[in-house]
Image 1 (cartoon, rainbow, N blue to C red):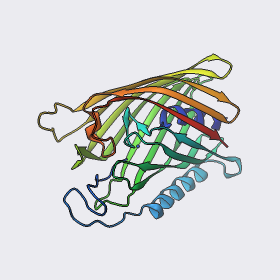
Image 2: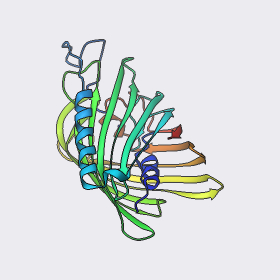
Image 3: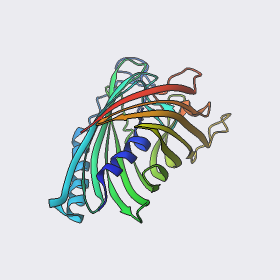
Image 4: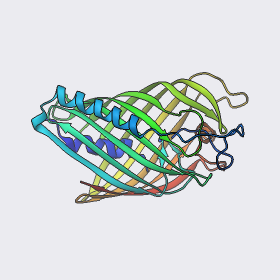
Length: 288
């Protein structure tokens, strides 16, 4: 039997996006970078449709009578994804809801608030699904797909994109993952350059120290395809983190130090304009 708890643990450490988001940075209420009026982008129906399809696929492939449901609520001091703040250093509220079969299929939806320096409220939604394979008593493999959707109060072009990933885990303590997107939106200093392929490799883990106290850490590399950005010499960047986590029943507290290449912040619209490329962030989660 494949443990849902194991999948949730993997999600919290590797996708616990602190502790992800692409849209055009606004320069004023109702204006894009080009100074043109914009309309509100709504992705909620799309999110529900994506989640419904993934749930239907999971239930069809697995045993509907053996489905379990779960989720978590999380508060973060900063929303960090692949080493870079997606929230301009602001706090965020996040929720995850998922279903899984005991044959390893799973599907769910994850959402976060985004409150960037433009002082407008934005939301990110992710519908995801996949299958986890129990290779042995200590090794697992996971294949998954994610549909990233963004709901903005100021954007005139969609920032949505899709990603597929494969990962291998050891005792739910060490995980190596590879991810590929065929259509990620590329930015540079707030300007949208277009859609291009991206690749990401990530190694993360957590190690038990004492009675629910864990050491956590990870390192990754995010590779960007064309176009080349003049004077940036940036076709990818390294990122990493180290920290501690404390678990008590359904609650978990994470505190970590996060760092990335100095130019990485320009690749995301909510990373802010400052020179900071490292930060300390914390999250508190309740699993249900």
